Length: 153
Length: 153
DNA sequence: GCGTTTTCTGGAATGATTCCAGTAAACAGG
DNA sequence: CCTGTTTACTGGAATCATTCCAGAAAACGC
Image (cartoon, rainbow over all chains, first blue to last red; front, side, top):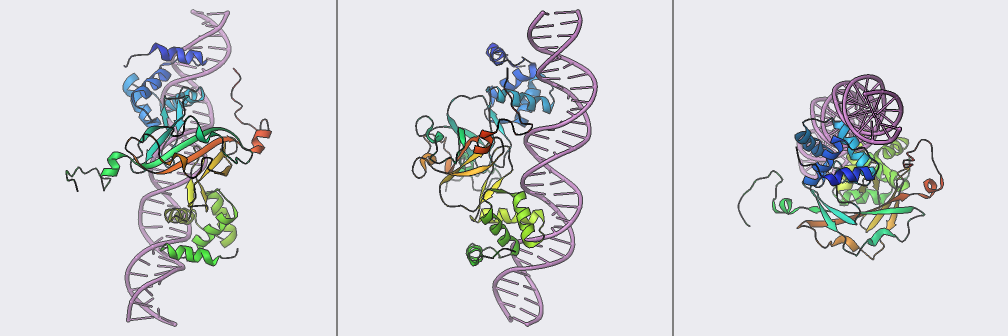
């Protein structure tokens, strides 16, 4: 089992959340792997604690996201992904081919698009920017079947 | 049945797509209702043609989106929505409470965030901006019915 | 410790979307 | 106009991420 960060315990207490093994393990899992899916987290936590129910993980992810300790992002057509980097204005690049996600710091200063011109009377509280494209690996390979042909055309 | 636009027929031909009743009806359905879900479209097309299979509609939506005649957007936690407004750089506001979607023209000129600072070697081809908040109706009402009024610690 | 409250377990359910095999319709060519 | 090939549509079943449910187990306040 991985080292338990005392900070995480305090972080949970601060938000009025109970400190449970599952929650600490979920936080630990996301320390290691950025942008993990719920399924990834389930596997990590099982490696860590031995066993957890899928629902416990979903519960944790929901509670931690609601408390602002995690950020949840859901690229169209892909399962949701979770990350510990919260509270800053950063965005994401998603690979159309393999679904991999990476962080992107905002181009235009702090929160450029947060005040849209015409928001139709909506009370806007968040601007979410997602870039779509191909990750370096997928951009290099012609076929997605992962065939390392060592030719440079 | 609604008026068949000759333009739609030409639009389909231009992209090398077969002209079918279902496809025309889907295009017509989206003329009337912006940001419709697949389910909305099924209902519209059934009102229009009498009957369609759900899969026919999904097929049409996919073919038309792939051909660039429709744009598909998928707000996290909500079913996908389709619109005919394509080819321009416009974004969306989504209501957290009722899921309603509205168009937003880009604040910063044409395509502000399309060239992120550090894209980790990704070949980016699209920047998608989604604003989250409350629509005028939901912002006015305190609690619709049984909604998560969440925080009272 | 003890009781109350919240969380975890396991199983079943949901909702959007896709897969599949067969039938029907669309277009090209004669 | 008729025919063949290609592509789309039908209906039903399947999939996948996520949620709902009821009971058992753990967490925290006293």
